[in-house]
Each structure stands twice: as C-alpha cells, then as structure tokens.
Image 1 (tube, rainbow, N blue to C red):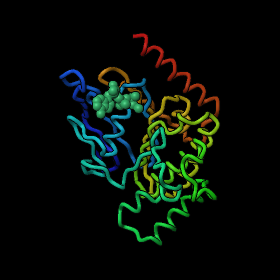
Image 2 (image 1 turned 135 degrees about the horizontal axis):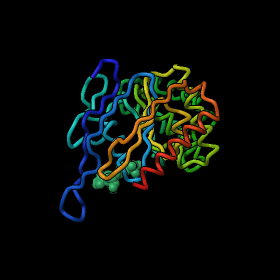
Image 3 (image 1 turned 90 degrees about the horizontal axis):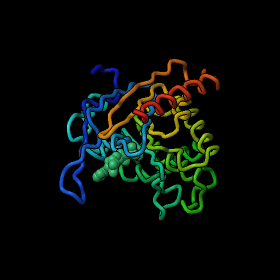
Image 4 (image 1 turned 30 degrees about the vertical axis):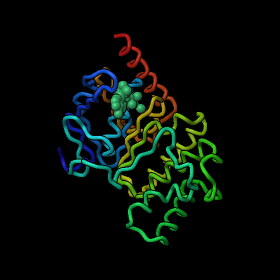
Amino acid sequence: MTNSELLNVKHVSKKFEHAEKSGIRPVLTDINLAVKPGQFISIIGPSGVGKSTLLRMMAGISRPSTGTIDFAGRQIVKPSQRISMVFQNFALFPWLTVQKNIAFGLENSRKHNQGQIQQKVRDLINLIGLKGLEAAYPYELSGGMKQRVGFARALAVDPELLLLDEPFSALDVLTGEQLSSDLMTLWRQGDLNMKALVMITHNISEAVRLSNVIYVMNGSPGTLVRVYRLKTPVEQRTASQIMRKTLEITQYFKQMNRR
Ligand code: ADP
Ligand code: MG
C-alpha cells in the first residue's frame, strides 16, 4: 500500500455462522479496494451481496474473517470517531431530541465540555438545515429531516471518513436529491475534516452523479466484479454525460444478471 491511501481493504473475506443450520456461510470473498483522500466512492450491487457487511467492517463494528482493513496506515480493530456512519433507516434515538441526537457521539467521547458540545451542535444545526427543530423528537420529523439529523450526528465527531449505507433510499426522490446535493456542497466546500466518503447505493444514477469511483459487487459470496473510474470532476458533469454513464452501468448489470 502507499501512504496516500486513507482506507485499504486487503483480501477481506467474511463468513457468518448459520443461525439455524450448523455450518458457516461465506458472505464476502477476497475484497480489495483502496480509498484515497478526496475521493467519493460508491459501491453498488444486488441486495444480499454483502455491501452492508463490508461497510460495517470499514466502520470497525464487525471484523473480517480473513484479510485486513487499514485506516490511515493502521489496522481497524474497533469503532473510532475518525470514521462515522449514516444509516438507511436513520437509526435515531426516539427518546432524544434533535439536539441530543446530534450531541450523542460528542457526549460519549468526553473530549469536549458542555459549552463546546452546545456550540458544535448549534453550528451543525445551521449547516445541515435543521434550525428551529432543536427541541423536536424524531417522530415529529419528516424522513428528510430525520436523515438530516442522521448526517449531523455522524458529522458531529469530525470524522475523516464518512460511510453511507443507502442514505437516501428511504426518502422520496426529490428529498433524496436535495439532501445529496446539500451533502455534495458541504463536501466540496471543504470546511469539514472529512477526507473521503464511501457510499452504498441501489441507485446507479445517484452513484454516477456523486462519485469518483464506482465499485460493482456481485455473486454469492460477494466479490467486486468491476470498477468504474469517473474522470470528469463531479461539478463539471453534464446531465447527458450522467445519463450515458448510468445507461452503460445499467446495461452491465443486466448482462451480469443474465449470466
Ligand atoms: P446487502 O447490504 O448487500 O444487501 P448484507 O451485507 O446486509 O447485504 O448481507 C449479506 C448476507 O449476509 C445476507 O445473506 C445476510 O443475511 C447475511 N448476514 C448479514 N449479517 C449477518 C449476521 N450478523 N449473521 C448472519 N448472517 C448475516
Ligand atoms: Mg445493505
């Protein structure tokens, strides 16, 4: 590996013990991928192929059965504040207000005093577009607003790597596109500590719109079967370029599933 890589997944395989039947089921096999600073990486693939499993290992929530995942040159062995995650179903704490949900990771870290936490949460509430909702509970929010809280909570700890597991797929199309474009604005402004993003998505055109590199997964156990490197900078991509690339990848998917 080179020092320029932020995240390095090397020969990673994952097996789960069968709950009902005795035996071991391989879910992922020999996954290799690298994430460099400045990159937005997407991973696409059919349901059940092991995408979430892979992302959880990158977050340190789960461990590879074989192989290693390095972050900034050191093996990931447990969750860290340097890497945070946004979930498809928001995963908010229903008993906490918006403000408390966002502050959660900071309160746990004990690195900040109450004043610093309050300030940080206020800044994020403004940045992510949640003003006026500080005291609201998750059940009072629309899906889009819930996911804004999900993003704010993930960003509160100033992560260097943000992992996104289908973050827009529980939202209606317009809300999802608004939130993804707001995320891109934040990312490109470069005010955050965030060095790279890895996103899982079902939505090929979303991957084409947002990413620098797209990995395609397939098979059982899941493997990476194809890489698309998108050369045109995100902000310079035209609607027709995006459409063409989306079509190309969609065609590849169709072929892949016919085999
Ligand atoms: P994807 O996100 O691509 O839809 P997942 O990573 O969620 O796929 O799951 C891949 C496979 O691994 C599925 O068959 C799922 O049932 C299995 N799996 C995921 N987590 C566990 C677990 N903790 N124990 C046993 N099997 C699991
Ligand atoms: Mg999944």
